[in-house]
Image (cartoon, rainbow, N blue to C red; front, side, top):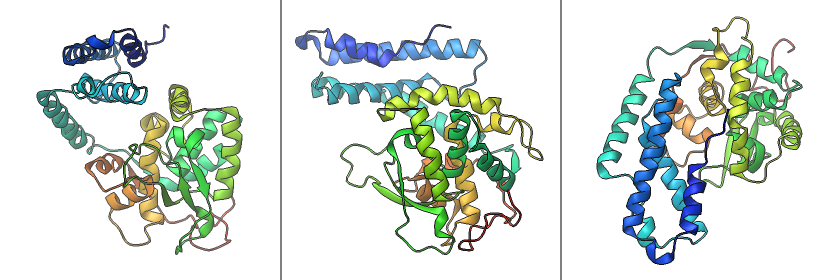
Length: 318
């Protein structure tokens, strides 16, 4: 199967080969049209192959135009008068906003219920798997971190705050992704809980980062498809709904599981679901985006011991 063309990089090359006097508002409008045509075609191909997308091509256009602008600005390849015209129209922005609101609404019903504790214990066992991809997936469930954070950017330091739960399951993290460059309110560090002790996380990360080397956040994302395929191929967990890993589908959705478990086990200040998710996932504020992380119906029976210092995680051995 032929790999898909990196349309953003091709567009950057076009700009590099264009005389400076031609990089103007008219060319910006043409690039926006080209982005629309390209990603609309890709979505049509995916639909024909039965691949389900939650949003229209407008979402892809918006995301990749933003990437395109950042690259051009970082490399000083285009003037501001060009960059400020690289965006969706007001009409398209309104349509995309409606799509996102409807998607949030439609994805909040007919949810699958599953018990958290067997999944956590299963993922702890998977940390001993021979496959680095399986171990990375297990860590995503147990830490709630993104692929790039696990493989490249994040550090898991010792906790610096007091907690009512066992400090072995807390860490102070740095290297949180998706922080806008130059944002004065960017999240530089955050105290978060872990569903397995910090020492185990660090030992697992050391091996995984050796087997899945990365030189940048973008470099880490090249593992996304393989991790998604591996997750969908994992066998069912006894006593859990069938195809659980296919339902979770990708590393990013592991964050939903993590947030729902943290609400039950690490909600030390009796916060709302949304506040717990925003705080522990590393969000700057409790924005509408947090709603998308509340679509897992995770039931906890309280059998895991995150409270007693130096006690075993389970009342019975793993």
